[in-house]
Structures are given as structure tokens and as C-alpha cells.
Picture 1 (tube, rainbow, N blue to C red):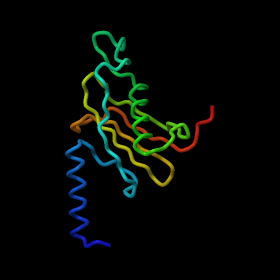
Picture 2 (cartoon, rainbow, N blue to C red):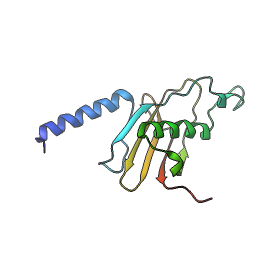
Picture 3 (cartoon, rainbow, N blue to C red):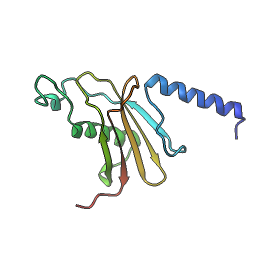
Picture 4 (spheres, helix red, strand yellow):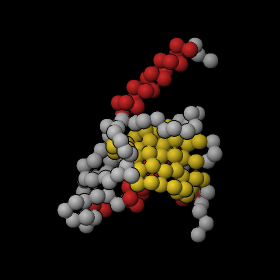
Length: 137
């Protein structure tokens, strides 16, 4: 095990990285490796059209779809074998909003995710978790 001062420096470097990217650590399993990436949403995304005229917002289903694709890509997993256990949509996403996606996997076959504004400020736009195994119809 590295000396305590090495662990402290490593934690400080990790904290600095999170501050730089606008990611906040996901509470929960401290052993789970969190992955934090920008989550680009094109300003001309088709879902903005007609939802709503004059005040476009991204539908929650479209936001979740983009996030799921990024989680599957980043973790190299087939999300058709996973189900969305819960999702909360907490704030609207408008054209031009800069977003960050942070997700962490735990030992109990769960992936927790948070979609937040970048730079980080409250509240997040959405959060939730995925569970391994397909949901029964």
C-alpha cells in the first residue's frame, strides 16, 4: 500500500480533475470507478423541434437515450441486457446547454448515473440507475 501522503496526493489530483470537468463524485460505493464525460446534445437535435415551439426543451426520453448510448459506449457493454431501474428528471435541457454525464458501476450489478450542467451547479438535470438483467414485459 502506498504511503498516506501518496494517497492524499492522488485524491487531490482526482478532486482537481472533477472540478475541471464539472463532475461531482457519485455517492455510494467508494470502490466503484466513476466515469465522467461531456454529454453533447446538438443544438439542432430533432427532439427540440416542436417540443415546444418558442421554448424548446429536450424530452426526458431523448436525454435518457443519449445518456444510455454514452454509458454503453464508455463501458463497452450491451445495454439491451440491462433495464432502467429508476430515473428522475429534475431540470430542463435547452438548446446549447453544456452537460456532463457521470456514471459508476457497483458490485451489485448496478450502474448509477447523473446528468449535470457543466460547469457543475445545482440541480442536476437527471439521475437514476440501471440494473443488469432485462425487465420482464
